[in-house]
Structure formats: structure tokens, C-alpha cells
Image 1 (cartoon, helix red, strand yellow):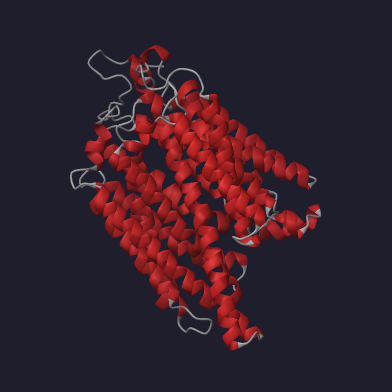
Image 2 (cartoon, helix red, strand yellow):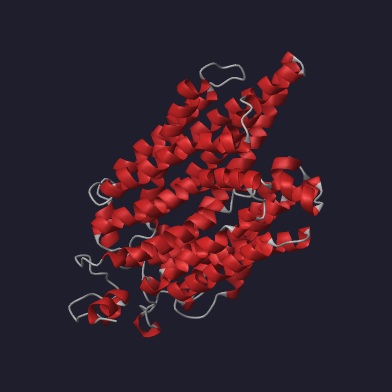
Length: 513
């Protein structure tokens, strides 16, 4: 291998005039973009697996003899460890090394996917899905950390985060479409096996991923010491109780004793976690990561945004299949309008402007565009005419564009001005906020929609036509609530993000202030 290639692969071996860990942006070698391919594929797998099995659930249930009550665990078994272990995964990434953590979790995720695809019973399937969640909880913060540390040049950073944001924004829609295609034309098992070739391609580019910094070069005082065991126990139990409690609130109701116990326990555990983190010497989540004004705004805005959007995804899937009578594949193709919009927003708009304008200029209009899209969808009725032209296409384009823009800008800001050892923690906190936001949004949307539907049926009767109309009406009320949440997110971004906070300036800092 040439000296030039070795210098690019390991920036710490460069000339004395080059900053440690800095990627030289003016090299013509296109292989400097290979790490982006690896990281983007990992992000696609993580997001895709949150939705790809949803459409395959009936086939799984039939073949494995799964009961109706157990069917939901094919989803919960993945979401629960993923959300609960994210902070621990981010801390491990900072201690062990982001590249090493990424490699181990990528291989582990692929192996768990292969095991799940070969499952001959529900126990193996649920166990494999849980293992996927465990490895995803380490891979997500490691991937975002590597992206932030690799692309430091403002122009290249914008492009890189645009691609990364596109994978996050489009992954859920792609998962729904892929799940329908694979289930209909191959077998439900391929919804899990598909991760194996994706991981294999990612591994081909791993030699070009930025090497870990030696422990001696990690800044002191940034958490390079031992593991905060009390913080680990409190955060894992608190986040897991919160995610599980919210998931059960959808079916059991908010006043169910189990749901109430889980939610109250999660609040108590997380409050205790914050108290512990403020006192220990080497905290699992240094509170300085959250106190940063702009970064805290990025965490909050992304959580609110996903809380508002999860109900939208539920509505689009229901309306396309139940009201319009589309097949799962046709329904997935309908949602691809949103996916295309998110790709344009992340790669062509945010990716190009991130280094030129401040993030508030990107995020506030993006959030308002999504609010407008949700408002359009709320006007849909069971017997609406010209649905695609007047409602679904314009609404999804607005939501997709806004999602791509905001997610790209927020992801870049979430890891700005963070030291090497705290990078994994900041990345994990950002991902954890999104998981909690999505769980809260799903539970809240279902509650509002169900309540509104019940009120509609009491007034209009319970005939078959009324049930469909009532369900669509309930979704419409839920979408108005989601629009309100999106407007709150826009207000938070407008107030907390100062005009001088920009993508370029944020990318250039190397340590917390």
C-alpha cells in the first residue's frame, strides 16, 4: 500500500502539520468516500429493521404458529433492547473505540439476522430480534461518531450528513416497501436475511474507515475511565420501562395498571439516573453533553418531530390498504413519494446548504413544511376523490422534504463541539431521544385516534361504512394533534437555535465548551 493511501486510511500517521484525526479534504482519491458507504448502509439496516417485519407479521404468525398476543413481540423484541441499551452502547463505543465497536456490532447484527431468518419457532425468532436490537444499540452511536470524526471539512460534511440523513429519513418507508416485496415474492424470512448481504457489502469498505484514536490521545476529563455501573443499571431499566410501557399503552390503554406502573417506574429511574450522573466522576451520560444549547435543541426537536410523524406513517399504511384497497406492495410504493421527498430534502437541499447557512434557517422551514403536510392529510375522508393528486402526493412531498432537511441538520448539530470520548455518548443520546419520541408519538396518536373514532361511532352508528369513516376521522384528529407537536418543534428550533449557529461553525469545533 502506498504512503499516500496509508495516510488517508489512518489520519494520525499524517504529516506533523495535519491535525490528529483530520481527514485531508483536498485529496483527489475518491476512496475517502468509502467510509460514508459503510456508515450509510449500517444506518439503513438499523432504520429498515424497525419496519420491515411489520407487513410480514401475518406470514410469520401463520408459519410459526404465533398467537395474536405474541405477534407484537416480533417488533417489541427489537425496539426494547435498542432503545434501552443505546446510552450503554454509546459509552462502550467511546471506551472500546468507535471503529472496533462498529465492526463487532455490524457482524453481530448480520449474524442475528441470519439466525432470525432461519428460526423454526417463536423463541428463536424473538431472541434473534432481541440480539438485533442489542447490536443496533452499539452500531448506531458508533456509526454516527465515525461519520462526525471522518468528515470535518464543512463542504464534505454537508454532503456526508445529507447521505446519512437520507438513510435515516427513507429507511422506514423503504422497510415497508421491502417487507411487502420480499414477503409477496420470496418469503418472510428474507425480511431478516436481507441484512446479511448488506452487511457483507459494508464490510468490504471497512478497511477505509477511520482508525480509532489511541487511548493516550483521548483528552483527559472526557470520560475515558471505567464504566459507570449505577448509571448503566438506571438508564437501561428506565429507558426499557419507558419504551415498553408506551408500547403497551397502545393496546391496553393509559389507565392499565401495568402501563401505569411501567411509566411511573421509568420516570423514577430516569430521575435517579440524572441525579447519579451529576455526582459520579466518570458518568455514563455527562450532563455537559445535554447542557449545550444548540445540541440540546437538536435532541428535543428530533424527538418531537418523530413523535409527530409516527402517526402519519400508521395513517398512510392504513388508508392505502384499507380505504384504497391497495396490496402491501402498492401501499409501499405509495409511501415512496415521501421517501423521494426525503432524499431530495436531505441530499440536494440540506446536504448542499449545511455548510453555508445556519441550521435554524434549515430546520424551522423544514418543520413548518411537515406541519403543512400533516394538515393536508387531516382533511382526508373515507370517500375523498382525487386522493393521490390532491392529498397523498403533495402532503408526502412536503413531509418528505421537511424530514430530510431537518433530520440532516439535527444529526449534524447533535455531535457538534463534542470531544472524542463523548462522541459515542452524544450520538447515543440523539438516537435515544428519537426512539423515545417515536414511542410516545405512536402511543399518543393511537389513543387520540381511537377516542375520536369511538366518539364518531356513537354519533353515526356502527355500520361497516361508518366504521371505516370513523376510523379515518379518528386518524384525522390524530394528525391535527401531530401537526400541533410539529409546530411546537418549530418554535423550539426558532427560540433555542441562535442565528449564528451554523453547520460550518458547528463542524469545526473539537471539544465541548
